[in-house]
Every structure is written in C-alpha cells, then in structure tokens.
Length: 102
Picture (spheres, rainbow, N blue to C red):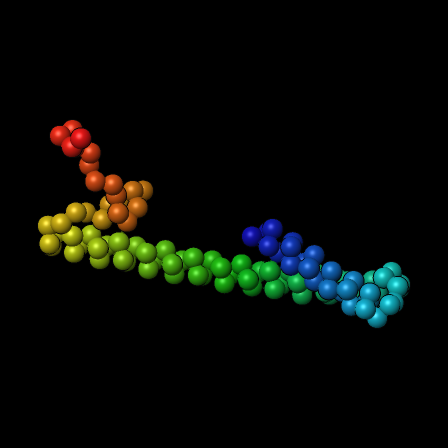
C-alpha cells in the first residue's frame, strides 16, 4: 500500500516539474516551495484511493471465485462426477495416475 502512495506522490511532484518545464520557469523559487507539497499530497491521495479500489476489486473477485468453486463442488457431488478440486489444486485437478495405463 505504501509503495503505491509513494509512487503517486512522486508522480504528483513530477507533474509539477513538467508543468514548470513547459512554462520554462525555474523549478526552485520561493513561491514554488508551497506548491510542491500540494502536488505531492494530491498524488498521494490518488494513490490511497486507487489502493482502496484495488482491495475492493480483489475482495469481490475472491468472493466470486469461492462461490463458483462451491457451486461446482455441489454440482459434482450431485451428479457423482469428478470433484473440481480444492483451492490448492485449482479448478480442474489432474486425474489420478493409474498403473495399468501405459
């Protein structure tokens, strides 16, 4: 989480430097020192928001995955077919190796 916030904070500062470069103004003047923390803070707040969005999406994806696995497990039990496997095995585990198959 901290890495995204630091990245976007640096990105906010880079935007300010780019803006001053386009305007061909010096980077370090007295009035510019007040603006840098503002741009860095805006970038950091965007990174914090983006991290929250990612956490929410991952939570939703994991819940959906678990629901689908449970649904497949119930269907396999009902039909007497092959079990869809555990979370560690994946959705479709390898068939058991038979010594008679050669």
